[in-house]
Amino acid sequence: MKPRKTITAILTLVLFAGLINDALAQSFPNPVQGNLSITAGAAYQKTDFRWSIAGTPEGTDPNIYSELIYNPIHSAGFHVAAAYNPYRRFSLTASFSRLQTFKGSATDIDYNGDDRTDYIPPDIGDTLFNSHKGNMQQYDIALSYSIFENNIFEVRAGAGFNYSKELFYLRDDALPNLNTTYEAKWQSARIFLNGTVWLTKQLYITPDVSFQPGTYDGVANWNIKEEFKQPVSFIQQANSSGWNYRAQLGYLFNNHIAINATWSYSDWRTGKGVDRLFLKNGTVPETQMNGAFKKSSGWGLSATYTF
Image (cartoon, rainbow, N blue to C red):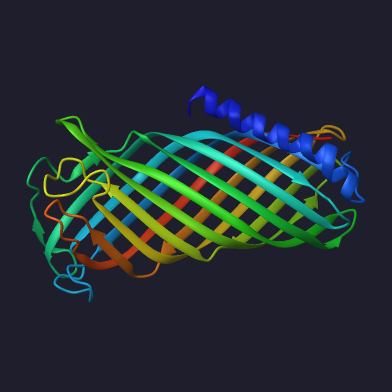
């Protein structure tokens, strides 16, 4: 990510904190002190992503015509978050993360027969590509309520909205003009349950599980396919759902500063949808999108400051 964008994101959260301090603190019973926190840190993620389409809108001839697999994609970057308890047991959270891809590989294979049979050789190049370029960014806002709490542990339930966008590349050193891209967008509601368990007065663990039903949009630019339009060669649309799991181990130095190590895993997928191709001759053929599937795992290290 460019330094200007990184600084802008951090300043946005600082401004968000300042607005809460000047405005929300006057509107809600809970003061900012002890109820507002800012978290920032670094993150690493490994992602497996794939999608396939059939030969017809009915899902036949063949049932898998073209399949694109990214396995795996390695990305690293940063995340920032803000949390505020405006009233009693309620909590508002907002977060943003951006990761830059630094290593990856992909295969793009077509078939004439059902169940991945009768492989079709590509017109140019091979079926194996590199994907050492790209990025991923995610926004999340949520409201939660503490349904149980004491000195040892707390349980919270809540709901929110999540937006994720990932840009994948297909490139090949033997084809310098190849710069194919695929952008995957996931927009989802999110329902979650999390908690905090105090192992000691300073050491704690926070498990989190969430489910997110939503929609999926894929946009591709197949830049060296002469019969395809650019920059939008085809789009894919479907309903989606996903599960997310996270565990955070934290250490509280004092009332203001804590450090956290985080493990996360997610499994997102779509149902059957539509694939709409845009050709330069003006036609827009459609076929069945069999589905998109993404599994991600990662680690993060962050620091939290509580006002």
